[in-house]
Length: 276
Image (cartoon, rainbow, N blue to C red; front, side, top):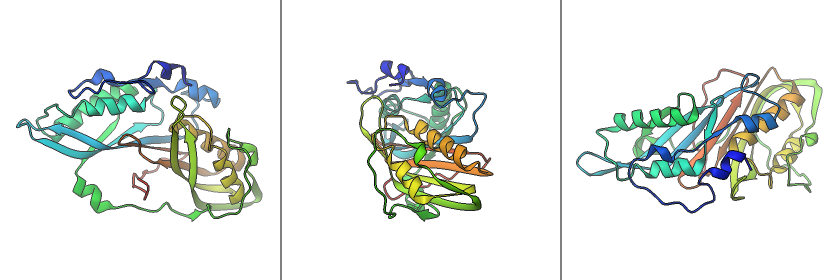
């Protein structure tokens, strides 16, 4: 367990406060998990963002009439802190009986509070149900590797030694899998997700990638660190000219978490998959 998470509300009984309470937000420093991966804030080999989507966002107009919407929050991958997920949910629930003059006022408040918790500016978009409904859902790009015939016997820890590539062939491709699963390091609840890999480098053996992804199945870690571990293991193996790894996780408690890590300065999409 991350040492800071022991003091968070995660895995504990909590009172649900329905009036605006920014002190509910609980930041967890990224440094300990970066250190596990041999990284520091100064040596991060990637750029990126964590997209959080909130499907249980509501507040009151000055008239007392409630509003419902969908919130999109983008937290920089190099921010000093992640925001512990249950505290994030409790904070958002504290808006339920709180009046705001208009949507812009709420966006400003959310950006201020979340940026203070993350330690870097957090992007906030409040979107209408109609707007999000019109976008629908998308499929991940490239080849799905889930139908490959593999044998698996280890589910406890990620096994980068399973990964194989053909260094004599340089390819540019996109592959993805919906078989990513890990466990919350505090509550042991399952975290279900889909992972996409886009790269130019030594040709990655698809079956070995699928075996590696499945090896996360009983691994305990936060969403962000799972994606960072996959990125680093592939970077070491492929020595790619460019690499992007991202995961789209199934929501819990009205929030989904979607970490993106890339060697490139790219415009990252935040499109829902069918399980989202």
